[in-house]
Length: 248
Image 1: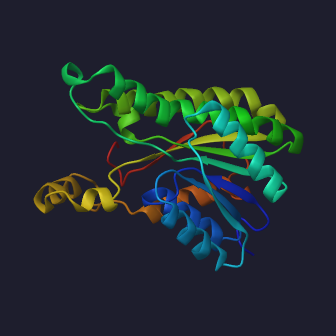
Image 2: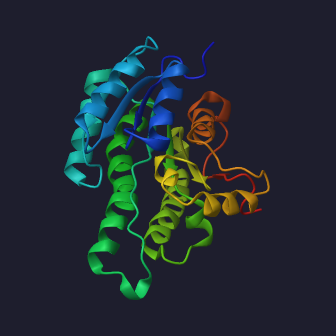
């Protein structure tokens, strides 16, 4: 029996990295997968095809979750196309790193909107469906940076920390309706973005982690499978750090 058999999941920002790995793991575990992408239509179409090869229904939507009306339209379309929505994974996120003294208002606003406001938008839009079904699992992607902060990332840290406070509040508000809300906080995950970095720097980061390696997108995806499945039916309001012990 596959862990997510018969469930419908929506993954935002699935065209690459962690979101891509989550979408694939979910398809592998029997979930029907709706996903969003923003820039590359080709990547979106390729992923739809790849996910369908697992024998599940998959559909990509070109949508910007940081836009309130677009997020509402997205949720309505997913429910219309799939007939239900069981799991919402807010993974879409960006960075615009610079020190506070150099950071401009646009860099602050953009990161807060894409990373944090998008969670409010999609969760608010999906809540009606979840409440009608009397079940639902919301998984919001934070970061260890949201737990401990990081120099040069005040905007990113604020957005990811905000996700934790938001998610804990949602868990309290919606728990009585059978809706769970948890947070995944990845540490140093090796993706396309880290491949361009200097190998010595990357190795020094690995050495500082108790498990002595960077995480993979699949490590994060496995955690999301658990939180989306009925195996975690009594877990809500929690922050799961997938960081190899980095913040221990």
